[in-house]
Amino acid sequence: MPVSVVTGANKGVGFGIVRSLCKTVGGTVILTSRNEERGVAAVQSLQAEGLNPVFEQLDICSDDSISKFCETIKSKYGGIDILCNNAGIAYKNASTAPLLEKAEVTCATNLLATIKITKSLLPLMNQSGRICQVASMAGTLNWSFPDLNNPVRKLLLDPALTEEGLLDIYNKYIEAVKQDDYSVFKRDSAYSISKCFLIAHTRILGREMKDNPGKVILNCCCPGYVDTDMTSHKGNLTIDQGAVTPVLVCTLPEGAGSGQFYREEKLYDWEHAKFM
Ligand SMILES: NC(=O)c1ccc[n+]([C@@H]2O[C@H](COP(=O)([O-])OP(=O)(O)OC[C@H]3O[C@@H](n4cnc5c(N)ncnc54)[C@H](OP(=O)(O)O)[C@@H]3O)[C@@H](O)[C@H]2O)c1
Image (tube, rainbow, N blue to C red; front, side, top):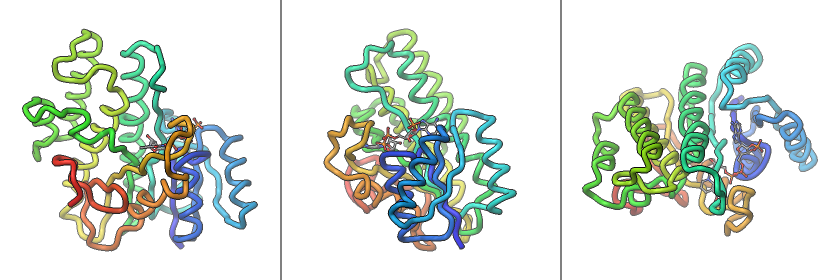
């Protein structure tokens, strides 16, 4: 019986992903949430629909919560077959928070904590496991670095880029925001940068996994523009529609590649901004 884990699943796209995994994959679907009350309420509302997810607490920004969650996976569930890293945050467009706060806080969740939870749970993934990183079209290169000669764009495309190299670029981004220097990075671009670097990280991990047949397949995707709190309910897709591409990435067939970006259920070329 497969074990699936969805982060940030008490509402929005994550909740839709849990609902879809319960219906299509079955087994044990773990709805995780940083807030226990909200997570339990979400499980109860799916139970009222006749579905049977289980709740576990997980705050991806807390080392303590991550280590307790890993112990729970080992002792109670044995391992993970599907991991969907959906948890994410975005400041509202109208937010007047300082740019440095936006950059640091957004990247702490969408990039650094997502890398941390992925690497913490990777050793607990079963053979032929699947990982989906929920990124965004806002993280595509043409969005974040439209100038083809931008040196960071070139670095991100370098097949020799390592996680260390990526974190170095991240530190340079934070330094640029501190210095109010937007010669390389766009101003007020915290969300798109966080997702762009997450996609770059997916490509790095994906390259490491490429020559590992039968092992974990890891990719990322955009769920589309979804009607959730994050979009102030302006998105055109329901949460069930927003769950479709993440669930496809969570259930890719054997032999599917790693390190790729999916949009609208199809492979999307991150570099050239077109379907493949
Ligand atoms: N909606 C869209 O149109 C859209 C488009 C592209 C990409 N995305 C991505 O899709 C994902 C889901 O977005 P959404 O629209 O469903 O947003 P949402 O309605 O705001 O839900 C975000 C979820 O992430 C959780 N979360 C935030 N920080 C967390 C942490 N440290 N630990 C655990 N959970 C945490 C939230 O928990 P709380 O309830 O406790 O805050 C909430 O459950 C995000 O990664 C987002 O960037 C969304």
